[in-house]
Length: 104
Image (cartoon, rainbow, N blue to C red; front, side, top):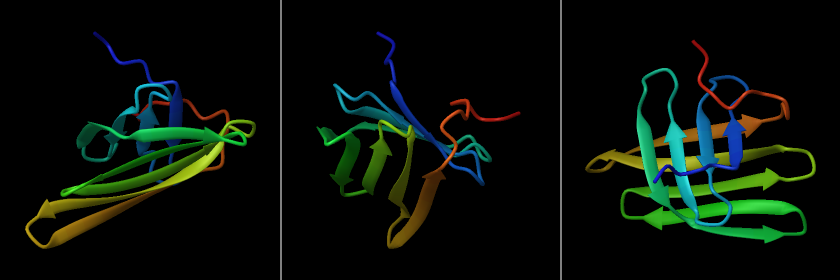
């Protein structure tokens, strides 16, 4: 069954994407420059118009916030790419009309 992502953050500078399903917590991160994709299931909450996604595992720590009224948000992903090596991705989405897809 195809996962439907109803929330998407697209980074203003890199175009990287973090999208998730606000009910199931299923998510997908795409590094648009390399095609690297990370999927998983996190914990979602909606409080006072702010949708959050969190996932903490041995190889990743993800925290994302989406302001539903403004349709903007931010995220920080810390991924272990090799033993003792962590890579951080930051997403800042200030454009509520940005298409949720990698450019190109």
